[in-house]
Length: 343
Image (cartoon, rainbow, N blue to C red):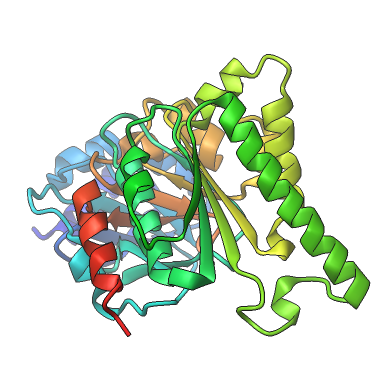
C-alpha cells in the first residue's frame, strides 16, 4: 500500500472523518493534503499524530497547517537529511539592493522570501540548536545585500553572536549593543530618529516613508538576540516599554524590529510583545505550551532541529513551514566581501 492508502485506512480505523486526497514529496518535506468531512475536528488528527508518524514511517511527527483557500488540511513532515541547505543555493536569484530576504525553502520547495520593509515587526524563538541564531545571520546577510539602502543596529547580550561583525568595514552596521545600558542608548538613538522623521512627515503632509521617493531615507533594522536576558534584568520594565513604544510607531518611519529569544515563556513573550510583533518565526520549542504562547496553536514542539521552522502572520496561510538555509559567521563575511565588488 502507498502512503495515501495507508493514511486513509488508518483514519478509517480511528473513525476520523477525513480523506487524504493528494500527496506531495520533495527533498526536505512530505505533504499530505486532507479533506475534512462533516463532524471532523483538527484536534482529532493532532491526537493521533504519533500513530500517523508510526504508520507512515515518517522521520518527524507531522505538523498540521490549515489551507483556508483550498479548504484542505496540510499534514507536513520533515525528512531527515544530513545535507545542509547552503545559503548560496537559496541566493541564486538574490538581487543586490533588494529588501526581499531569501531565507530558505518552503514546504513546496520554493524559495521563501520575506520583505522586511513590508512586514510588521518580527519575533523569532527556538531552543538551543534549533537554528534561531543561524536564521538571524541569514537576515543580516540579506540586509548587507541592501548596502547603502539600510542601516543595521545589532544587540548581542551573549557577546558572541554578533561581536565579529563589529570589525567589518564597508558594511551598514551602525552600532552593536551588549548590555541593558548600551541597548537602552541604542534604542534612544533609534527613537530620536523615528521622532524626527515623524516631525518632518507631519510638517510636509506625509503619512509614511513609502509616500515619497524611495531612497530619501534609509530603512533602519534593529536585530536583538536573546532579548529575554534584557527583559529579566530590567526590573522596572523600562526596556520592554521602550521596545514596544518604538514597535508601535516605527513601521511608517521605515524602522523595523526583529527580536529573538530561546525563552518562550509568558513573562517574556507577553501580551505587549505579541501585539507589537505579529510576524512570528518559531523553530523547535520544548513543549506544546510554548508553541501556543508563540503561534497560538500546537505544532512547533514537533519540529526537527537545525533550521526546521514555522512562520505565521506573514502569508495567506496561518502557518508556513520552511527549511532555513545554513550560513555561519565566516559565510556571512565571505558573502559581504563578494558584495563589495558587485557594481
